[in-house]
Amino acid sequence: MKASHKKLAAELACDYHVASNNSPWLLKLPVIKQVNFSEHVQELMEEGPRQIDSDTDTQAFQCTGKASDMTLIDALARRKSSREFSKSALDLQKFGQLLGLSNGLRNKVGNANDSGRNAPSAGSLCSCEMYVLALNVADLEKGIYHYDVGAHGLKQLKLGDFKEWSKRMLLLQSELCDSAAFIFLASNQGRLRSKYGPRAYRLGLLDAGHVSENIYLVSAALNLAVTATGGFIDDELNNALGLDGVDDCVVLVLAVGEPAGA
Image 1 (cartoon, rainbow, N blue to C red):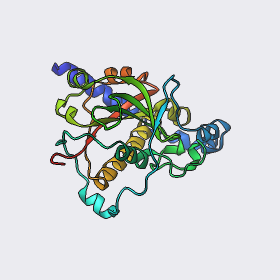
Image 2 (image 1 turned 90 degrees about the horizontal axis):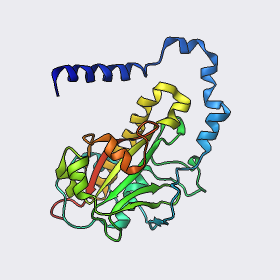
Image 3 (image 1 turned 45 degrees about the vertical axis):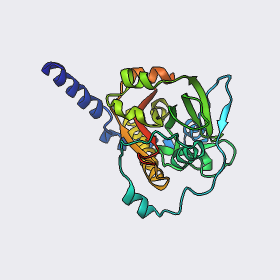
Image 4 (image 1 turned 90 degrees about the vertical axis):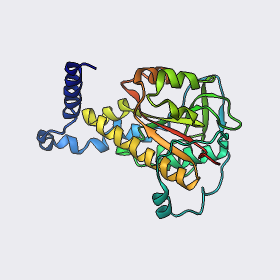
């Protein structure tokens, strides 16, 4: 990249960040303080998790017990990024535990957000969606899926072996394609923006960060290798998932699988 292009990109990044600053004049608008109680916001909070319309069924995970006897302190101590993956297939139910404990429902009460999520979110709007690219998961066809929170299962979007596509077109770190699966964290910016305006940009990144840390901690408890990366081609990935890249956009990719030697 030319020096002039780098400078322009840096300036745009600064403008993007500054545009999300809260202004002091907001303190002078009493109506702002009532936004949490507005009818529109209450409706957003009561909406159930996203469901994808398609002709395919959702492959539900079995309801299993706790992930392990490992304490939180031990999980924090073991939490790390690892790029060394085994060639062994990832157990489907273990994968389901990882997804559910990271960003699933705490209690199976209908299909509403108010049943509680395993990850905090700005305004209880649950902005972080999880999509999956299965490369080597036992009893799961290779392809792209959406994690259906309400059903605790995977909704099939596209079948196929996308490993070479990931290497050539998607990731800047092709060695991560030796993992068993990718978890794509997508931010529902449109949902956040309807309440928070430009501030949604920051809050969406924070929401995804909470889910990402859960993925790391649960992976430690399940003895899985995991690493996160922001090195991906945004338009290529958003288009593959059917996201517009503005109101819905991937903000982080995590590679996961059995650790090398397993």
